[in-house]
Image (tube, rainbow, N blue to C red; front, side):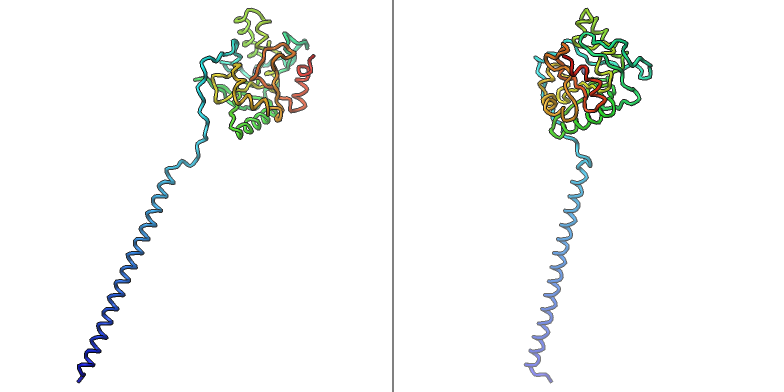
Length: 276
Ligand SMILES: [Zn+2]
């Protein structure tokens, strides 16, 4: 027979195990709850982070500086050389040489560049009208490099007019004569056909993408693009063809640049560059 003492001891022992078991159960339950909370939290974070990820467009939109409003006092160039129609068929055959090699109203004669070789360098648009511009390959590549170097400096250079076929210049020049009354007056602003640097595919009219209303206007000289070009264009083989008070007597054209970065281009423009 167990004594009362022994019985008490046994009871105490039993209580201990019961207590230990309930404690263990409590601890396991607590651990499970904590684990559940951790897993839930993790899943929640994952869910939200995946949600925010999908709401971001895969490609970052290019940040283009908003154009500041163009001042009203801006004076458009009296005689815009802006082309509003596409050049005539590039397949039309035309003489590539001028019979006379003398300058006409200050403009030097230029042969038309090889149309097959021209590279598209940009499109130029105004409202619904859109056209593609091209240049000779070496000038095209140099221009692209220049445009992207300017872009690194947050300057937006836009090509307006590159290669022009002879027949197109003819149309343009006759329009100027009609407006201004004489070929002499027209030649101050536009070259006669056969005498435009644009025929060569080595000349380009440039503008500032942030100031579309200043395309081919003297106001262009106040833009960041022009200020940048004045400093850097030479590094890419470009120079201003008609600076202020040029020896050819042609009106100042801040937008008109010619390429002299290849021996061929340099040779073509040497009569104009070294004219007295
Ligand atoms: Zn031009």
